[in-house]
Image (cartoon, rainbow, N blue to C red; front, side):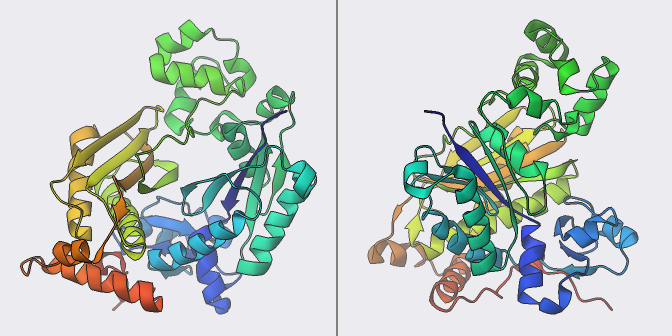
Length: 388
């Protein structure tokens, strides 16, 4: 029996949620970003027609799309929608791997007898997402997670595509080098300098040659993906009972301030998800992948559970600065591991230090969100200043 993986990717998720909540913005160029010196976190397809892209400086996006609707990030709202949507997906599989706020893998292996043909299941998933949540998503299906992710990008937006067993190379050869996940602009330039213009050209190189040109890790990655083989970047290995979030940039991101802004968004999503689930953890970790496919991670165990978002964020920044050499980034993630359930005594102990005002504020905000869904509460740094 073949493995069947489905990759679901919500189209322009942040911007789509904004258009869902504010119908007057539907069909208009919506850009989700933070301030003049911030970066674009997401944009609608209407904004992309002007050349706006994720991770682009907001100032540049304003020049490209002066009539765009610029909105602050509302991470708690996006998390609320994401959690509800992911829970619905368990109707289709007991094995779901959420890899970001707007992406997940579903293992549909062996479900055809119960649910019918895989393509029909995928169509029902898309319909349920649209009818229940008012959102469009793109779906890719393949034997491996890597190919399923490529397939979900193949007919975006609102697409559905399956790579059938035995059809992997034909599918790979319909793609451009830049379509291969993890192959950034710099790598494409280097490959073109070697006369490589397509995945088929790339397959002409021996494994040893690619390792020699690009190093052991990057060379091996290129060798595998050119053949449609899963390089193992979605193995599912994670910290023991952890919560993490990561984001992949459409264009490599290198500006330190922009990287720290994105890291703050990720930390906020992780921290309040942990708090609202009444969990505690003391293991902090960060992860990033460079434009040359090198994946790095760092972790640190605190002497007591994480009690405030500020502490979590500052520790993540420290780990990142300790590990990152400034190379352009394709992906960044943050998380808290070693999680366990809070009991009442532990909860009181965590926030009993009167000097820790930040912890008390974060605890109060988390409780408001848990009880009342107060998703309009947003970190000041993530709110775009009013225009004079």
